[in-house]
Length: 546
Image (tube, rainbow, N blue to C red; front, side):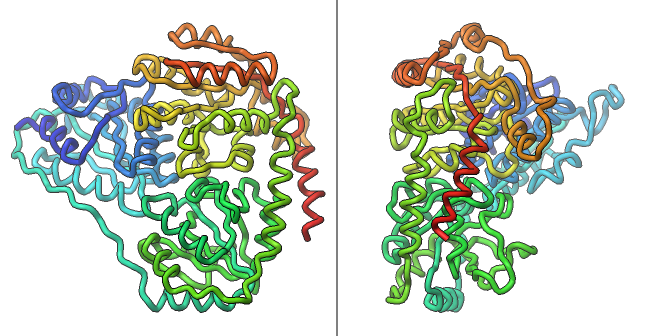
């Protein structure tokens, strides 16, 4: 069998549905082998978009998303998606082409050491030097990509290896099961919980896996312990649950930080150090139980007194079964915090000034989106408000990146979400800066015939950095730009464009776009002028809870 044919067979054996990317001369054999495969090729307009799509596919399905590029410049365009997937714990494979490694007549033309480039950004990266090794390397890389902590892997296929004849020897796929935490660690964790008076539950990014949601809901309902989440843990348990304190969207001084400061024990489920710390540990301060697939990584701000290592869902189930709720637990202060936080979070939801406040924008989206609808965020100032104020009913219904936090990922992620869930409503929310970094993928969305709403938040500048610039006392400089006419831009690709002039008009246009077929882009002006005012109000008002 031809090596490129075997590679495709190995990917089919792994259950691959899509390959996102841009082929080049060096992987034409691979492309030809893909032609008759059950795997669908999604041709993108930039390799970066392909990588973001593959990573998001992995995030949503738990399976390995696959993307491809040619050598040199194509491969280097996958660097940011590789970091995005690896930091964000999204299983993704990159397949890149390369010049012949046995004999080449083109010198060093377009050749860079892609494997060395990918090493700091992946869990596994190798060049295939023998066609007979293809199936074992594919199986090994897929295992590595999916194992906790999931991440990016890379295989380089030189064009002479792709053409070689080889033996067809496919390795069977088997699931990986994680060990259950020891009874001793469960008993020690329970002992710490019984010793506490005000325990608090934190749900982190690592808890956003299958089976864990059901286990956590049962634990919360049985124990009565209030909980909060990191940004990438949003929706693991519904934020409409009466014991939900909210999301740690800010590093400090939010209402939920009052609860964190009062807690004498934090049960930290799925902590991932890539996220900004939702709390900082201090010597002789609040105790922490670390529950995760892996032991904690200790640093100056995180040094838990107890590690419960093993399959998270099984650990939480074991704790729930063994727990006898003590009478001395007191959550009355937390309930007060929940009430105060809810009042503050909703305070600008009905403000109809225009340009729109971000709080009004996200409230409009929440009102029109079904419980299982997906909002894919790019990165910008609005992300803080969505993380803090947009409540999720279900996991992975607000796709935000709090790991690499890269701009340009929003639109490709939304396209991938729609491919995974074609019947769900999907909205992409981008700033004008982030949108223009991969705006060309609008053509990909139109070509695929998907139904998608893209909201471009237009403030004519890099709003997040301007907010930081103002907060540090610097003058406004170097962060403004000019935008194209986004309505005409959308129409040029075959999408429909809108530009509302009021809050009510935005709601009408959004409702129309969500109910229609095809790709729709809404260019909406945003008002960030109250950012510092609202956060200062927050700092002043929360003092009443101390």
